[in-house]
Amino acid sequence: MEIPLILIYLIPVLAVWGGFAFAWFAKPKGKNNVKLLLAFSGAYLLALTFFELLPEVYAHQEPRTIAVFILAGILLQIFLEFFSKGAEHGHLHMDQAKKQFPLLLFISLSIHALIEGTPIHGNEPILYGIVVHKIPVAVVLGIFLLHSQMKKRYAWLFMALFSIMTPLGTYLTHQSGWLREQGHLLIALAIGVFLHISTIILFESSQGHSFNLRKLLVIILGVGLAYFL
Image 1 (cartoon, rainbow, N blue to C red):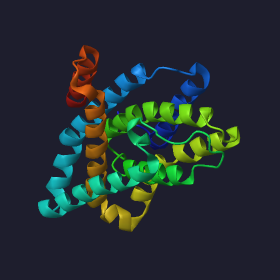
Image 2 (cartoon, helix red, strand yellow):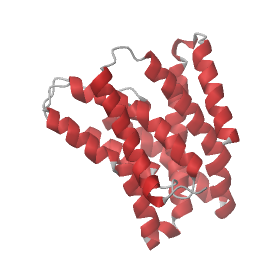
Image 3 (cartoon, rainbow, N blue to C red):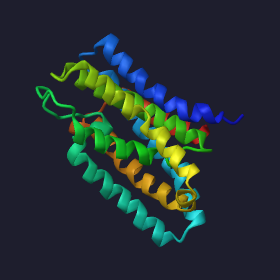
Image 4 (cartoon, rainbow, N blue to C red):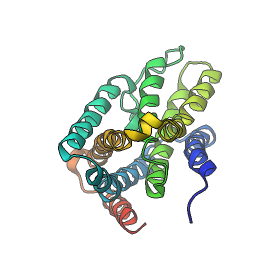
């Protein structure tokens, strides 16, 4: 059964607010459970990229062109992380003493979220993968914003604007004739972003190269669900 269009736009918004609400009410001090969810989301998103997106784009476009856009997506995400300080993969290294609205963080995360929205329409597994990715990111963002010195209304404004960026990317892609015509190139760009984010998450989840059975199990679970769903 196909997901109604309104839910395609609404679910990513609810994922962001769900993560922010958890940070607001639970006030988590340790990040171990968030890291496990990040490891699961990284594995799930990486597997979906291979199972769903790569076959789709290579079936509709000249392979060399697709490869260029995938590499462009990787480079774009690396560039964005100079300003987001790693928030996309659950690590935010910024000065909490600042009181100003974190504009560069917002712009970089918004560009990332807009690109995330391009492959969602008509692809339910990708929608679920992005939702699972957004929840721990929203938790980490929420922890940072709520513990920073900025006014709380800035934190709420940040999350409100950020939460609509992914559905906005989905909407623009499928309402604009020009963007729709370039759809597979945009998906290739998103693949590059997903590949970079998911591999960084998995690398960081194994930081120190120490064996962790729980992380291994959630990674296997993420790949397995991506294959069977």
